[in-house]
Length: 159
Image (cartoon, rainbow, N blue to C red; front, side, top):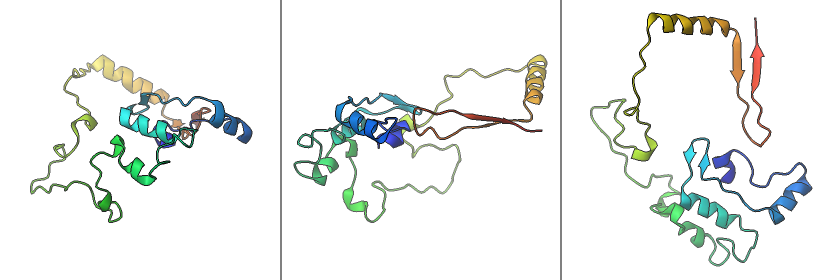
């Protein structure tokens, strides 16, 4: 979960021995934000409790999976539907589908442009943009997957 949220391992070291040492002695850091936005408190709490190095205090130690399943992060999860691969809530079907209809999405997952002012481009600004685009016509940016703290994008130029 940590790696999926933050695109890196929580205790990565230069060597395997460094990594083991970090696991045992380094404090776990759970940033409130990742590259996509805020990470919820229940999510951060779940990860923190699963990664507790004291096995007696680790989530799931006392009652196994039921401790984990009852955590606030999984509130509303219908566990009986998981093996059946069924969603927890019904998917609403509409006769008239509109690609701009976001009524079935959680409001906090929808980007809103309502507070943005429209961009007005005059002829001079359009010419400036076209000139800059021509300069970079043969330029390609290929991002590398940010799997660790040594993330470096790659740039290439072709004729």
